[in-house]
Length: 550
Image 1 (cartoon, rainbow, N blue to C red):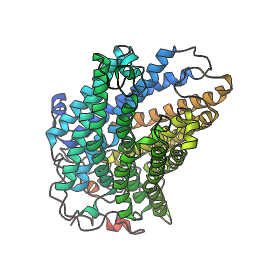
Image 2: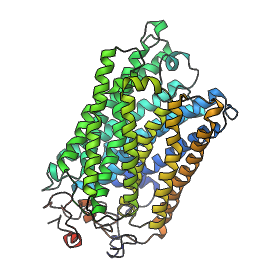
Image 3: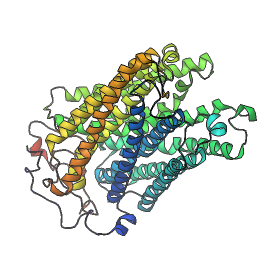
Image 4: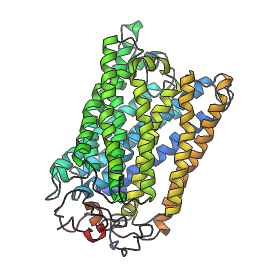
């Protein structure tokens, strides 16, 4: 099989497809095609990713030396705040659901579009407006509260652009709700004939669970940030103790959403890894139904563990013990996925193409992040490492090592379908290796820093921590180069890459039964699903290609 160039299948791009059916900026800005809207999201979040990366560069440059000699304390506070805000709300949360989910879900279920195309376009415009409000806060001097907006500092004492930032996050929340609602209705109502619930790709199951969190959890966050903005502007007593408010109430409201939000970021990547592992090991996914239900279990249990962020906030010991138990318990569905992926790989015919390299990196880094999460779920250990770089390292192993590696796996896996072109496989594998090495060099030393007691969010630190911080900054430099390489060769491939056939990976799934790029209507005729998901039958899987559509 020549998956690298697509030579095993002749070029099948139609004369008119979704990329060229209508030219002009206006046709893109007013499009109702889910594929084009997905690309609008993809371009937008790429800009936000680069912006968030610039803030990260300033953070790591400051931390090369122990003294705060590059940035003043207030400026440093604004740098890590804007880095967190941009990366969490404008990249990690929408990266796979809004961009790739928009593009792929109708294709994967045999539909011609999402259930509400106009609502889909509106969600992108709402996302852009929210992002512009947040960037306006940068122009106004930035915000220095941390991305968690902890009160009463954010609501009463900060002189930064808290209100504008809160409005931006509030507006962006509507985009998540609209996207989640659209996905839920589409998956329920628009599946192709024969595509029963237990024939759905696990990517779709993951997005269904993610959509439930978006719809149910996001309104709580939007209400919380509105209350912060109102207290900041009007001085009403909601969170400030001097005004009769309760600052711990904000923590409850914020983390009730923001811990499930971790699963908004990670569940779609888990769906991606299930697709990639099965394809490149040429095996049916091990324990399909267990993985599907574990996604729903994560979505439900994720709403019950927010209190482990508040072990040092003064909550009762009994509440802490319950939240500790639930935090250990929520790790079980995630562990099930890792074991099932490992069982799928066992005795598989594995090929280490670029998507598989990223998927394997996801498993390793996510496992480290998950195991260190158990440390933070333990009351005694959490008291010691709370608000230290141990928490920073854990969070980034989940979010960057997990969510972002899954995102990179998805981009490379479905890039031939999105663009109709192949990318240089050698550069793809090299970038995956560079990112893996750079990531570990960046964040593993931070576990040690945190254990030794270095607080996060400090721009100056004792001299004995410098070596580990220099290692971390060196790793961040390598990591940045690793992310720029795919950006360059993917843009290059759109013009110069070899044409991809409809199914260069010999993968299973309805999205691989249409042309690359797909036509505007996705399928010329409604597909009929006649077999189970992931019906690989190695070593003769090539002979089975096309059997999914009758």
